[in-house]
Every structure is written in C-alpha cells, then in structure tokens.
Length: 388
Image 1 (cartoon, rainbow, N blue to C red):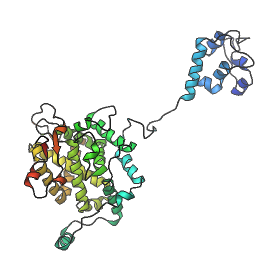
Image 2 (cartoon, helix red, strand yellow):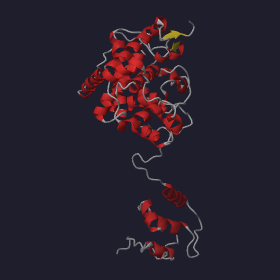
Image 3 (cartoon, rainbow, N blue to C red):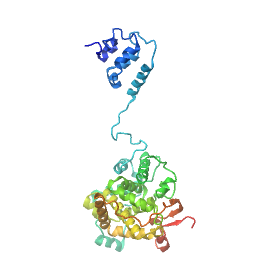
Image 4 (spheres, one colour):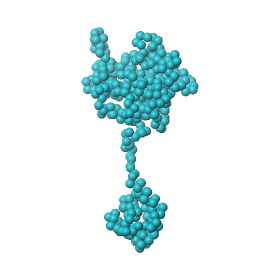
C-alpha cells in the first residue's frame, strides 16, 4: 500500500476507537482537520454512512474533540442528517391522498366496492315496476332479464347513483380534480368550490348541487371518459363543441343528463342483452354512456343545435337509447376504431369558431328529468337566460 492509499476498517472497529486506521498516510490523523477531509473528500456520502465513518469523525471519540469546527465539517454533518431522512419512492407508491395525484376509474370504483353502502342501497329500485298489459307486453316482446349473477354488479351501479358528492372525502376530491385537469389541461389543483367549475359546465360554484338524479355515478362517468385513453379525445372534442360561441351548452350538466338516461336504460332492462352477452355490467354501462354522449354531440354538431333545442334533443336521445342500445354501441365502436387509426376528429369541426362561450352562470339548465312530462315548452327549452 502506497502512502496515498487509504485502508477502511469495519464499522465495529471504528466504534472501538480505531479511527486512526482510516488513512495510513497520516501517523497522527487528528493533528489537523483538513488532513482527514482531504482523504475523504472523494468518498460518496452514502458510502460514509454505510461504514459509519462520518459519524465517527464528527462525534467525540477517544477523548478527542476538534478545537475548531470548520465549514466543511458542518456541511458534512448536515449531509449526514439529510441521508438519514431520505425516503425512497418508486413509481406509484405515493400516498393515495397526496394532493395533485390523478385517480383512475378502476381505483375510484374499487373505493365504492369496499365501503359500506348499505344505507344507499336501500333506496334503489333495480327495475321498473310494470302492471297489467305493460307487464305482459314487456314479458312477451321486451328485452331479456339480466342474469342472476350480474344483478349484484347492477345494484352497485345504481347504489353509486344514490351517493352524493362529499367534498370532505379525499377520494371524491381527487375525482373532481382529475376531471378538471384532464379537460382543461391544468397541471395544478383547484378549489373544490369556485367559479372555475362553471367553466366546465356546472351551474354554480359547487358541483354537488348539479348531480340530482345521477349522484356520484355522473362523476364516475366523466372520470371514465377522461381517463380512458380511447375516449379522452372524444371528451375533449365534445368539450370544445360545448364552448362554441353559438352552439354552446353546459358540458358537465349535459353529461349528468346522459348518465340519467343510462340509469333509466339499465333499470328498464334495455342493456340486459348486452350485459348478458359480455357477462359484465360496469363496462357495458360505461360504453353505453359514452356512446350516448357521442350521439348527442353528433346530432348537436351536424344539425346545428343550440341550447334552446336541448330538451327535444335529450328526449329523442332517451327514446333511441332505450330502443336501440346496440346501435349506439356500434357507433362508438366505429368511432374508437377511427381514433386508433389516427383520425383526429370524427365529430368534425363546427363551421365557425368565434370567441369562447360565456360562463354557464348566465344560463339556467333544466335537465331532461326536470321537464314537465307533457309540456312542449318545457321540452323545447332546456336552458334559458336567468333574467328571463
């Protein structure tokens, strides 16, 4: 070993006071602080930690105490403390409640699968009650009933539709934040109450007030739409259409109405045939929601609909959804196949885009379930200026 080489001993030896063997080139290693520091300067902090060297050098050992603590010794002590405090993170191992972390549809659904929803489940009506001729006609000519093994999954979907939005629940907040970020492209969290939710098409500053008739299922559907890579493009296209200066409509409120139509179709067994075929309920319900929203956007765009036409458009869509669910699902399949082939837009761009649509706070949006059953006026106007 030449005079410039160093020989490191075990941590046990250092604890026994044999720090003098750290560097064989110095017969009296503690004569000067700078001598030891020169020998250890090129050694990584992590290596010093593993051998206990830095702790031995910066602590009082064998009665030796440096007369002057220079800046390098203090910095070494700070780095040692920092090494002790480092917490390794790998991939997605961060806390589920960490602010700013997006949430997937499957994670949100799993939350509802594991919590106690018994109080909400009591409220559901899984199927439509029919009597007399209506019951006979449905039995003879209606769609098949849902298989027994799928009814628990159907009931879960309907139970989630009974749950409201709880801003105190971290998972609920993450769902809202994810929807906002994916639609707007924002990288930052936003307040769970505020005017920015009107930009997404809610009526007010609190999204919870607009979920009547669809509950948290409406937010899960939006989450599915923006977090599935196949439907994200569609969600962004429809969102842009909703902000057209002439054909504007409140995006999120329209989505809530699509969820209501989906719930009705599920309860009336309109989706049972497809659920039985796939042996699943949730994926079919999600696809049906997306297909119905796609159909609405296509009609809205190609027929130059405006907010004044909303009631009639939704009523016609409700009829089509119950009568021809497979037709809607096939349209979605064609759209997604086009997306996979790189077709940027299947909705087509509106003829003229002008200034951005005004905030939805200037509009009162009445959902399809809130319209008078036999009122042509109610059917024709789904949104009216508040001052009227």
